[in-house]
Image 1 (tube, rainbow, N blue to C red):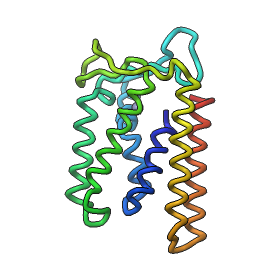
Image 2 (image 1 turned 120 degrees about the vertical axis):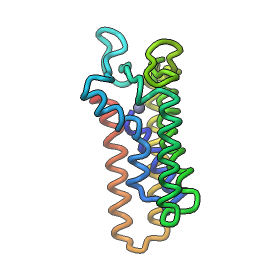
Image 3 (image 1 turned 45 degrees about the horizontal axis):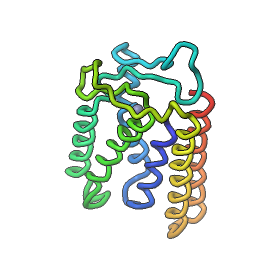
Image 4 (image 1 turned 30 degrees about the vertical axis):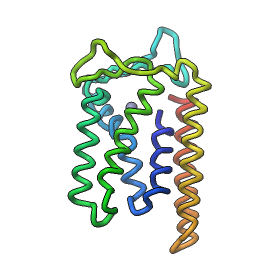
Amino acid sequence: MLAGHFGVAGIVKAWRPGIPMAALLVASQAPDLVFAPLAAMGAESMAPAAPGLSGYGSLLITAPFSHALVSNVVLAAVVGLLVQVFLRRRWGSDAGWVLGGVVFSHWLLDLLVHRPDMPLLPGGSGPPLLGLGLWEVPVAAAVVEGGLVAAGVLLYGWRTLREPPDRRRAWAYSAGVGVLLVGSFVFDLFAS
Ligand SMILES: [Zn+2]
């Protein structure tokens, strides 16, 4: 899932417009940005959940570091603390809490859709593995993810176009975010 996490960023941007959208987009994918280099080094991986299974929601990850519950609590706390200390004046008094929350929202959304494949403790690969498995019902998962994408695009556009300092730029940003979110949803559905 790429698009659902981006959807959260769009929703939060409408609520806290002082925080740059780029920061929210990156925060929403933070655990996967840890996963990618670990996977490249062979420390983490992903594969079809069952032999022959393919398409939307078919993946099972082995991610004992990037997607462990405790790792994500720590990652969210570190990001939140850094933002709160260094960027609070520019981004708003509670920006660290908001960014930390967006980082942790990734794990919560993954918890909803993943089959049980996320450990409790970093380094752990045995039970209890966490995941509620909505991907077992791809249509239901797609409805949830599509809802987040729609909410993200609409709320971002509504907020950005409401008080634009530069109307043409506001439309360009809204269109760019729309293309990113809808494009990543199409990628999730048909190419991942
Ligand atoms: Zn993830």
